[in-house]
Image (cartoon, rainbow, N blue to C red; front, side):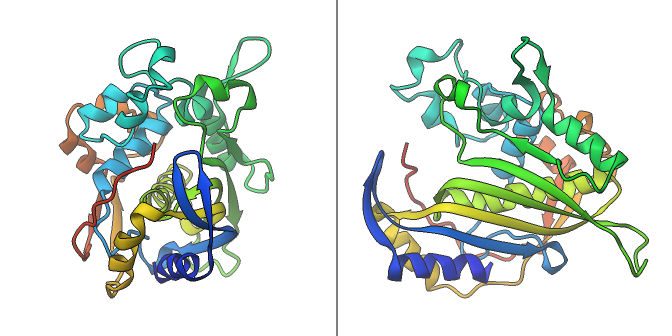
Length: 290
């Protein structure tokens, strides 16, 4: 995660100050972060990662859900400010409704004929059947439904890539994942996004009998809120620890095995994924800009 910390410093030192929709930021345009899964799971160690919330939200996305009450049941409150926001509440169809956000687009994209497309399930099946496919893509950015979302997608699109094991060292090919993110809250959001997509890479690799290899993030508007400056300076003053390891329940073989509706209490998450050897500095609190 030293590359993440280096980007924080670059933004603080060289970024431009701008007034945005929800506050003053300092930012740069378009940077790339790369993480090899063989080096460890990319969880922040210079502050504690809310790992259980990362997992709860990811399972929620991958299950195609939009009900914030499911996340709250699992101890995850990160979407609650959006669910309760003045701009969204009049549009919500029920208490906790977040509209056609990420997971709905991943699993229930609307076609012109009224039918839906399960993008994620289709991509997983195509990874199994044609590893050379150049269309292993899932999109959350649906211009026709932006107004039906409590928050337009920040991480907009991701693509998988299979690398053959030419040396036949492990006798298993490798799976990589590239994600594009348009708007990047570098202190609060991006560490969450890194861990979430790294976890998805592990999950899909296991579902397709591949080895998780590399996570690549292309970040568009990378910014730090002025309100987070002190928190960022505190984080940059800390020395990183070695990266932890991710355990994925070997019984996870398909999307059905991570159905968030079957997770009834927060501790159920630990039956599916866990972090081992996670050394970290204490949490650093900061308020999310809504």
